[in-house]
Image (tube, rainbow, N blue to C red):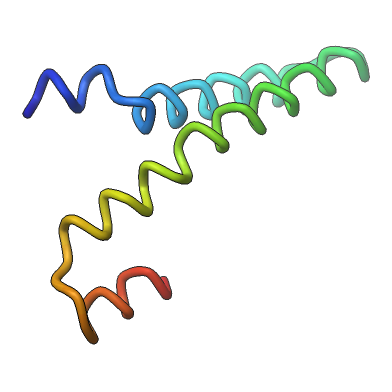
Length: 71
């Protein structure tokens, strides 16, 4: 389980998003900022679907799952 989490698209997406945010914060030109924002978008695209799938497996169907997905 731990190996699956270490090499998951979710973790890769969060890592990419975080690093791109750091690069964007220190961007000196508009081009650097644009590239960082594009990388943030890719990172978010990797992390988002797997986060929803993980919620579906963690919570039982019904009120509990509805609350988790609603947040």
